[in-house]
Image (tube, rainbow, N blue to C red; front, side, top):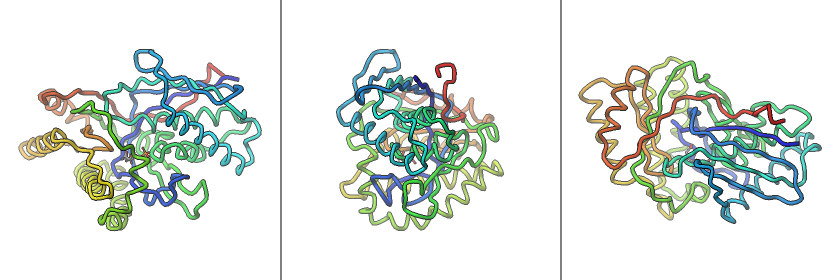
Length: 336
Ligand code: PMV
C-alpha cells in the first residue's frame, strides 16, 4: 500500500518555546498559530525492507537528507509506533518504510519546513491504519516530530494545548476558528538567506536558562485568552498588540538563554521599525511576527493587503513570498 499526503507550514502568533519533556516534545506552555495555504510539502510512504528516505526540492532535484535529519525521521516513526500501540491501533503499520518527501518550500523562504513535513508524515502514517484516528490524535503524531507541526494538522487558527498528564498524548491541537472565519494574508519578507546555526530542537532544550523564561510562562495564559478573543471578535488591534508582545518576548528569552540565540538581524529590526513608523502615519491593519530566523511575517487584513504589499516591495535586499490562511494537512486519496 502506498499513501500520499500534503501539508503546509504554520506561523505562530503566540509562540511555542521550551518543553517540559524534550523527547516527547511536550511544551511548557500553550501556543497558537495560523496555518498557511502555501507553500506545500508532499510525502509518499510505502512499506520497505529498511527505513529509507528520498527527498526532492522545489525544482524537483533530489536533495539527500543529512544523517541527522534521517535519524530524526526514524526516531519520529518509532515514537509514532509507541503512541499508536498505546491506542491499540498499530497492528497495520509496517515495521519499516520508504519515505519520499517533495518540498515546494523554497530554501530561501526562511520558514522552517519541519512543521509541514511532520504534519504531513503524521497524516500519511494515520492513513496506513485500519481504524481512523481523530484530528487531535493525528496532531499528537505530528507533535512527536516537531512541536509546532501539531498545529498544521488543522486549518485556520489553531492552538496547541497542554492537557492534564505527562504521557505522550498530553498536548494536542485544537481549532479556534477555520481559515474562512477571518481572511488574513501573510506577506513574508526574507532579509537573509543564511542557514541558521542552531535549530529550534536544541533551542527549546535550553529555554529555561533564560532569566525571563518563568515570567514568559506566567504571561502566556493571559496572552492565549487575549489572542483567542481577538480572533473570535476579529479585533485586529488586539491581535496585533498581543502577538507582537509575544514575539518580542520570545526573542528576548532566546537572546538571554545559555548559549544565547539571536535569530534577528539588523534587517529584521529595520523592517519592524519601518512598519511601526508606517502604521503611525496611517491606520493600517498589519502586525509583524518572527520565528527562529530573521524572516518577518507581516499579517494583514484584506483591506490592508495592497498597501502592505507595496510597503514590502520598497524593502531593499528582501525576497517576498505571499500566503494566507489555509486548511491544514490532508491525505491525497487518489493514491491509496
Ligand atoms: O516545532 P519546532 O520545534 O520547530 O519549534 C518552533 C518554534 C517557533 O517556530 C520559534 C515558534 C512556534 O510556535 O512555531
